[in-house]
Amino acid sequence: MRVLVLNGPNLGRLGKRQPEIYGRTTYAQLVALCVEWGRDLGLEVEVRQTNHEGEMVDWLNAAADEHTPVVLNAAAWTHYSYAIYDACAQLEAPLVEVHLSDPEARPEEWRHFSLVRPHAVEVVKGLGVEGYREALGIIAR
Ligand code: DQA
Image 1: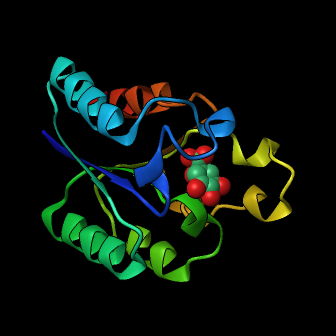
Image 2: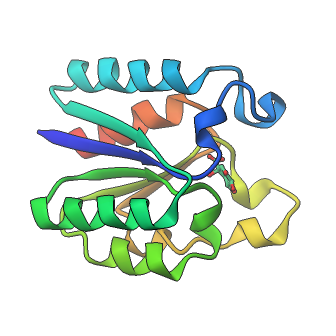
Image 3: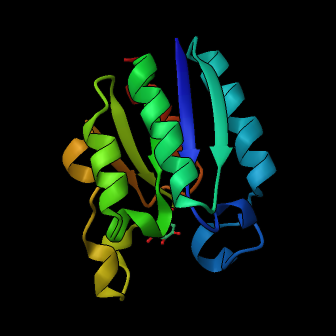
């Protein structure tokens, strides 16, 4: 089974970006780990990251056309993008929402609301990069 792991804005700087919140694993390491974890689960995993909302919408639209399961960390778009909400609404294959941190436990109130959640079969948060392994496991089951 093919699975897309899609990452939104600023996640390309993982490992360098606020490591006290997001950890020291780099984005390149995350990509390698997801591919390896996927292989162990019998999944063909492709990992992407973009800082451009339209590109993410295009990827989600293609996933909808192709009935591809998605693991999505929409990063800040999670909290305010109706375009991402509408794109996620079209997915028929499972969507798992993932966050490295636990946005609901963070002080900024705007992080406490997710537009991805209504369309996700599960939300994995606060587990750092391990959360991606968990999310892939949910897709595999
Ligand atoms: C994040 C949490 C979001 O609130 C934030 O905007 C991010 C990363 C996470 O993985 O913890 O960019 O999605």
